[in-house]
Amino acid sequence: MQLKGKQFQQLQEALLGAFPNRAKLKQMVRFGLEENLDAIATGENDEDVVFKLIDWAETNGNLENLLITARNEDCGGNPGNSQLKRICEELLQGQTAREQSHTLMNPCKFDLTELIAECRNNLLGKNGIVGFALPCEDYTFLENFCQRLLDEFKTRNIKKQPHLSLNSKYTSVSQAIKLIQQCKKNLKTGDIIYPIQISNVSTQKQSITDFWQQISVEFKDDDCKHRLIIIMWGSEDSIFPQSVLQLNPPDFTESHVVDWIFKVSSSLGWGEDVIVQWKDKMIKACLDERKQLKIGSVYYHLNDAINLLKLKQNHTAEAFLQELEILADV
Image (cartoon, rainbow, N blue to C red; front, side, top):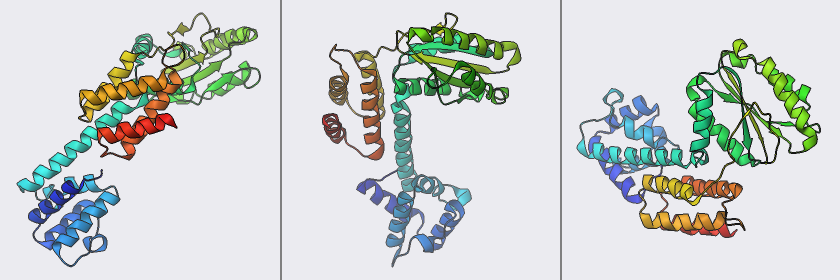
């Protein structure tokens, strides 16, 4: 958390009012922050000491702890000071809003709703092996898709394995089976997501079929208490096993862009004019020659925007849009 100049001044004044006795301030810092005030904030007077205390907390990532501790009576804080209460609540609420916006900004929150709903519907109540065919060869999309599944089923102690390429040049069927067999121990305690990249070469069709038949026998539902979720992914013309549930290929639209930008902008307190400008910039940056949104470009834009907002938490909307424009031109 980083303070603006006025916020820093208001917090300094509030702490001085709540702790007019240097000894009380020392106790709060020692009990709540487990630090020696004299070691982290020295000065000729109380104003200097409190200034350096806030600066230390801000620099070392302890500002939120300071705000909480300063009002915690069990840690020597002063919960009865109204000025301190107001500024601490204001700053902590702002921090919560930023954390919520960062959660919304996660690229895996962009669209995917229908795909994840279909997966969830086909996973509930099942054990053993469950297969999905994902007709999209964009690796960034795969990673975000898997992360969204992890988020959906986090209460089941679910984990993701690194992806395998089922291809005679890289990993044969027998090698893939042996690698996946190593998951049996982990399946005793939770679910596992295992992405398998497949080829669109027709000569690989039999290998893909053999793989699915063998892995299905290896992980029958009566042998597993949890789920082995195989995500077979490749281009739209890849040949997937018939018994694997084939998902629809992702199709990002302008409405998805507006929905994501609206939620993030609203969480940051930005107005409709910002939403429109940001939407126009994103659409322009991500359209291909067919006037369709390119999946890879969408994720590049999302990551650029997220990095800007996280690195500069006090960004104004205008400054953010200007820097986004600069990145788009690079």
